[in-house]
Image (cartoon, rainbow, N blue to C red):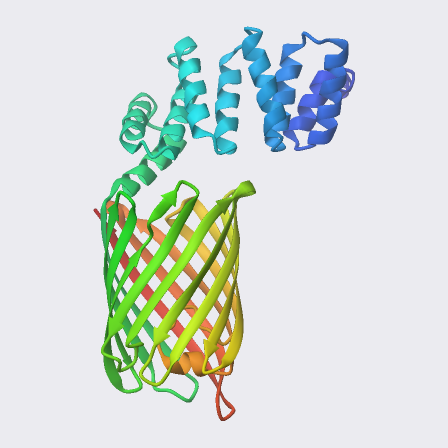
Length: 392
């Protein structure tokens, strides 16, 4: 009888009903109830605050922003209002405004640990890493079990690392057609003010001969929303292209989308190859989804390839699991002319990267391809790759 009475009480209380619906994700119903309450009782500040939360959760950021600012202007500025508005600004990619709200809230509530953490998030988004790290360390001194602060501090310490060295080894074997392939890479990365620069030496043993290649990658930022990829490489011409270059322009778009457009040039002794590529991707909470297309031009012939990538992040950008699927002749990473000259291929792959203690990162990659080469030769290719990276 007591449970029945409690349920009846909730049903007869529109605010309690709206609260239940809001926290169950029934945003439209909750919004309608709260708006009805506010028509009849304009000074019901709790209902107004909950309506702001519902709007923010439903990504109606401008409406929610106006509600929270009205509450602050009415001097109904509980700590929860400052927290909600600061968090909203972070969700809406406005870290400068979020920082201002946090500082304003901390003037009234100087001991609130949530506002301190949100301030650290805003500082991190603005790449003010030193101040963010100092604030996170202070938060953890006060609350050593603060999981969000622990995670963000770990990410910032890794990001502050200016250098990284890595080595990887890939082994491919075939059901027929080719003898096994071996490829080893050693690279050094340096984070410079304009973006990271990577130097790499690749060694391959393919077609029963050894080959060497040197490459440099750079990712210079043009502005906070735009960056580029640049690549140049030279080799001894035994397996790799004699010379290669690559360029691609990336642009962040509204709603957490990213688009890019670029090309690659590969100059083998036998012929020249040009690959044109475009991508559209989306950053979802905890996920990255991408669709990329390739157009390969070789000796007057054109081949098309599509690649779909899905990635799941486990708490940080350095701990993830990815799935790949592609159809078309162009490989994900061009090494040999034979791969470009194949008639067709279908590929599925996955990789997993796991952060280890002391800024080590271990990655495992596995791939299967069904390929068709000229003269109607068909083969199954299997590849595994291991990579170990150390940041410092």
